[in-house]
Length: 471
Image (tube, rainbow, N blue to C red):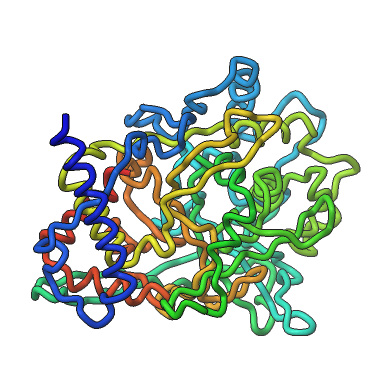
């Protein structure tokens, strides 16, 4: 027993040494192989594998992203069950109302078409991907960006009652090659997007568009429960500590109050709450109005005549959908106690990845869902905006984010993507075919960490991927 405590103390000491080396010595003294020769290990604590705290689930199979919170109270199970029914509904088949809520222009007929099994969407294959959308902006007054006056803020592929879809997105990939420091090579796929067969005329002058896949749904309730001050505390917009990382808080407008608030959801951190994110998806993706977005004008002038007298998504359906998403759990980390996983996490931390992919938060008090309260969680995100460089830029400002800024995506559950969603495509448009390619696309504020990864030995790179695959 004494030997076990000594070993744990040694791990903790080495981990602190690794953090000190990264902050003080790494930029000038780093050399390939130093992490493995130094024997740095990550000081895991009991319970670290519970990425969502007590709300974590043990499922690591094909349904891992769609489970309810591991600590869900019996009183909340009906909301989860009925919310799932709304989530899986295809809204062109709705019979219980006198109106046809879908459209008249839309990108998908239901939530699961984009978020299959509550996972992230797939990139474009051929001409159509219901889980990839095209966001549009045109220059507005005083340096602002506004929706296109005809096509709105999103290109819709389909229409009801004989109305034509707005156009087609096409993509061509070119190869970008590079080399690791050990001489081995890698290939990335650079997408080039084009809009074709625009049904209602050309886009406005200066229009910008961005292709994006649907992000995953699970764990959002826990992210929403992180107190704002914890997120703001990690922001460093002026890079005062001179570490090259200058995360900024996302800017959002609370629709109900009309006030500017912290954004934490969406690729550009433009939505403040799950309710608003869900309602926004209904109006933009399905063309279905709600109490938050009562007018269909967000899809452009062509459908403004179609605004319903009453919201097409009633208050109870919206409530159940929001409850379902809030109650989705995070799967447990697998193999967390394996030596190679621990070594991979130490390297991940040592090359600076945890500067943005922050491991630890504690949720606040959530009165209506106590299951989310006071949980120590490990999402590996800071929910902040970071400039990721020209390689990932879409040149389309969105909310408070520039065309090269993206919100740090959570990494929890990333290792189960292939098993649950049937693909391993990552980043905002799915261009990365796997985790390593996603790392190699990092630039801007993450350029130093990307370069450190590129200089790692093959063994050390494998350890990092082993760690990420365990999440």
